[in-house]
Image (cartoon, rainbow over all chains, first blue to last red; front, side, top):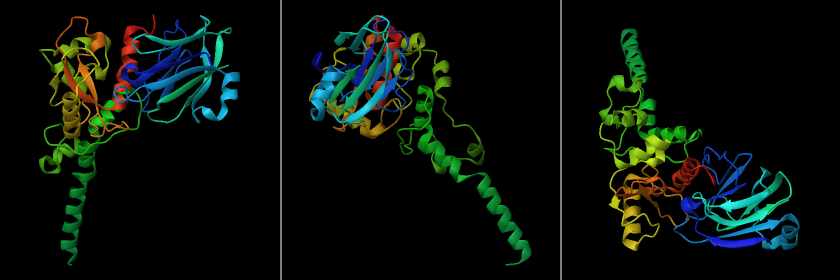
Length: 126
Length: 194
């Protein structure tokens, strides 16, 4: 695992993005996840109801962890990463965790333990 | 029934259909949600709320025949434009343009915010939940918060991140979906991580 944090994110929302990303999703569309090429917005447990466990992992580590990870795949796709960094931040720009990546496009999967208000979120890279 | 009487009954039935109960019910039940959904750019209203007197729309008893054919009486965009004395929240709205950046069409009672801090005491939480149960989310009108705890999100207005002038703030109830929409809009207004 690359990093772990327990967060109470503003507006119960996390942004997974390259720091240079300028194109954020227009709307959540009533769902838990919304994405553009450069940003994935993910809902958390309501910020006033408790902390959300957030983990950033490589694919190989996630495979090893197996059953101990949240079982719901809320998102799977590619993230444009021209800066070579994947950052998970609040909507106010507070960085919770981040990792360097070697490619300009990074495969991302978001695992959650609930499709409306997850308190356990794993972002898998690669 | 005589043929003449049958014709009159048929005519009355057609007139009743034209002043339509269906459209009237739609005005009362879905106006707010559809406005909010439209403002966010998606179709299906996530929340619905029943008609509540005083909060927009018309009850069946208030409807006149012409109303059934008319556009709903309230229009959020028009209301913004019609205001000659902008509330503090509207300063941010006009600058950044999102329906969650000001007290919404279902805003009723609110409580003063002690600060822009995201820390609330039990009395404030209880009051926001009471207001939310009564008049709903101030943006979409949902009377259920959509959270696991059932609690509404206390929403600062003007929005703290955009309240650069330090104007006094009020707390209104937000449902979780509108709170997240607001968060995304704030992030866009702030330019992401730039």
